[in-house]
Length: 357
Image 1 (tube, helix red, strand yellow):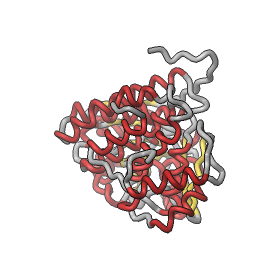
Image 2 (image 1 turned 90 degrees about the horizontal axis):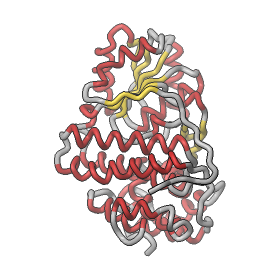
Image 3 (image 1 turned 135 degrees about the vertical axis):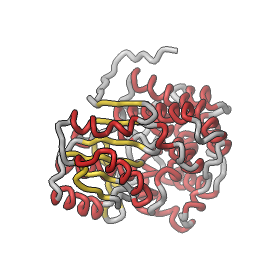
Image 4 (image 1 turned 180 degrees about the horizontal axis):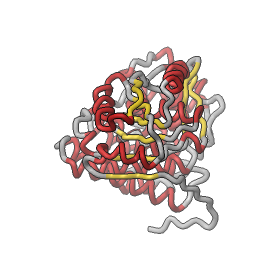
């Protein structure tokens, strides 16, 4: 199948990407390649041990460690980390973890232009983008800037064999969301579409194998490959309704990032499918099902993903406010944004009903 378009613009960021079991042990080599000598290593509290292991690996190149990264990149945490970076005179950043840690690294880099090395432990894909989402006063705002794009990414399948299956599934669906929305992006191009299709295919084939045998390096490696492709797509094209809804629910209601993406994805894709059925054909071809929304819902359910926003702590009384916020300053979207229709979508996702019901 050809993804040719008569007119398009494609932008590709310059970055170094390395894949391979054990490649995390090459961080010191990458620090030297950047001409750096004083690395600040970042993590969440839950992954402080992994950050400590990495600090031991790089030895004297580790100038400090900050292990308080958190979801949605709150400005106050960034301010604290930035002060620490300046105090230790850091000349590069090492992020080991998922989207929370990568987000903190990006937020520091945005303010300092320090080079970044990211060692992902989930499938968030944000490491492959120049996009930063930050939360302040209960609102999550995104920006795009070349300073935010990490210079080096090290994908190590050994690091994610211990990622719990539940987190594996929601993180994968988070990545798949980037690719699914890229299919109808206003600024899509043949390369972004090809990357999106291949990224979804990689997850469709490898994620069930990971669920069956979480320590399989070959399957874990293919999921990381899917995450890289889906993240690269996210960095090339604009996102739409799905991401707006998730940014609203995460930034204003503090819902967990990956789980929210997993639940909203089938509903947002179903909302847009009527407007762009042909563009979403790859979704049904890859995941099965009669419609794109049903295909993604069935795949998520089969993988044991969460299906209800109610299970994440959202209250039914929050739905009206969520609909109001999600339709304010709306992202471009292929289907018209209607507040009542969005409220219905959120209610279906809240209750765990199939998309479109």
